[in-house]
Amino acid sequence: MTRADEKASIDPNDAAAHSRSWIGRVPVSAFERLSPLIGKPDAEVEVELTFEPDANGTVRVSGVASVNAILECHRCLEDVRQEIVAELDLRLTSSEDKLKELMPALDVMVIDVGLIPIVAIVEDDLIMSIPARACTTELNCPNAPRELASSTSVAEDDSSRPFAGLQALKNSNKEEC
Ligand SMILES: [Zn+2]
Image (cartoon, protein in one colour):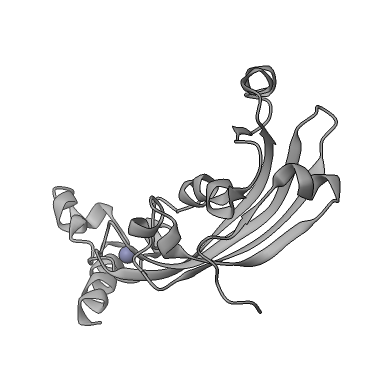
């Protein structure tokens, strides 16, 4: 594997003309907006992109970008390790008119002619791929505070709730671990 290159760039039109791919790594520090979000300043973003001409006159970029992040769970406020994976399928063009013509049916990005940084191609999709919840679902949060809610519904007569005893047993078990 080659060294991570913070200035990695490509000419999408040229790459598409030759149906080329770009495979490599970019240090997350090169991503101005992404890097403060992933809690791991030394991480590297792995990128694998394929460029090809699209029938509508744009360059189609498809592939994947991924990075290992440390996210803070909003529920337990613990750090959770998580791989962020962005699947990309973009159209690149230097024409604003093409953008208006093809959006929103396709994901179109307007770029300058010539070399553009790999960062510019993958950063938005990576940011959008950061999960809203760090612990896979809030219910699965391994660090969730124990529920205190069952004590709020004791108004009912216990004899009408055959499983009340079982529930109490469960709760007492919970408190022990
Ligand atoms: Zn959590």
